[in-house]
Image (cartoon, rainbow, N blue to C red):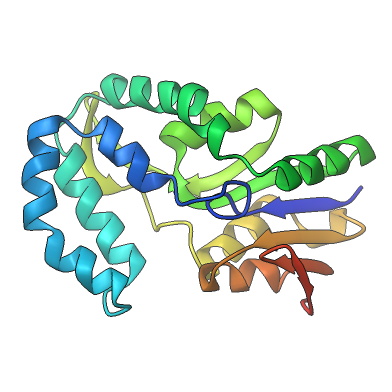
Length: 199
């Protein structure tokens, strides 16, 4: 059996989906205040000065601290069902189908949130390694539950879940520098759908 590892945003989809999820899931007043208060961080991120992990952590903390888990889960389910289908790349979905037809084990490995990725992956019969948010007593703290699933954390999560010796070949697909460590695990790697040397 072979193993196929797919980044989500920009690889399976044609855009970054987490910002769109936040716009739909964060309460309107928080969203309005956050757009102003966090704008320096967003500008820094777009300029390449502020790391993506920092901006994502700040947005989640501001947007979700104290919010009921079930409220945000409902947004995640709706987002997976109603929004994500229009963002999917036909070539990516065809490749996923090809791997599944071969009997490969197929997993999404993403820095995105399980709130919307889990229902989407369950619908498509895919395994999932991703970031998640901490919660206590039924409410989100706004903080990540462990490290964000990016860069080397992607590779570490894969190695913990899928021991290399159990698979014939490993395929990996990504589209940003945050996927490089993931691609390095592969016998056959694709960056922005172009084959690259890896593993």
